[in-house]
Length: 290
Image 1 (cartoon, helix red, strand yellow):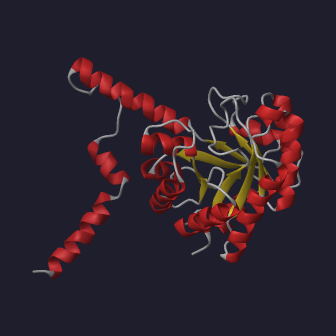
Image 2 (tube, one colour):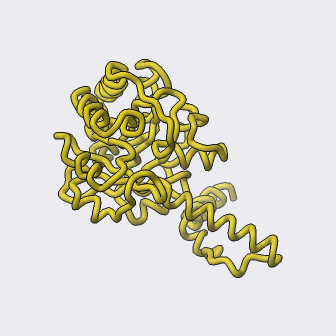
Image 3 (cartoon, helix red, strand yellow):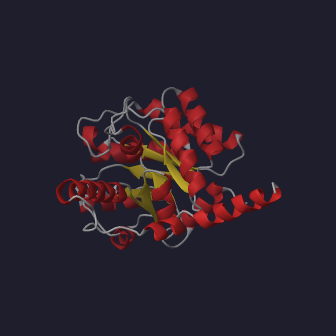
């Protein structure tokens, strides 16, 4: 079977922009892979769905890798995993990248925030110095190469908010020189800053579209027109899910049942998760025991 990283590279290197819908668990990843060629696991979304906590560094490496493993098994598309800061020193970055490869990820994002990190569209972020930022990427590249993997390494900088756009572009170039395959400048605050980000690097570029975030929100056609190669919509499904679940519980509390809320039928859901296939397999084993 083709390496997930190879499949992801083919997507990124194609003429069309690679669109990454955000998945926050195995079921949302399965749904995303029905319509898209790659899927993204958001640290924000995994922290919410696993712990019910904000994206402030609560989700540790083991929990993140475990969720990524579940998500990879649930969908056919290559998965880009948000690996935060790599969870420590260069040795920790190597371990994180190795674990993500073992889990079957096609790509990872390594960022330059000071630990504990926070969501890229929050204020008061801090980033490490140039040497440590480069070292994280070098460690990720070494771990990838030693595993003989084609994992795509996305170098992310959060320098825009604390240091300004000029520093963010310089940091992105440092990550590119260290070996990042794709450059992700987080949270540009205007269309002009997005345009600058899209054209500042030789490597493919990555944009992040969050409803209500710091960056102007655009369709992926608009993002592609600016020159980006990859765009992620990390929180759309999580925010929609949260609204739908809250509406369902409100209906149950206020109306005594939930028929007023739009939802899949039981049989539609059964089909979605492939229950018939498992039932047929179970019958085969039952017949051998007769």
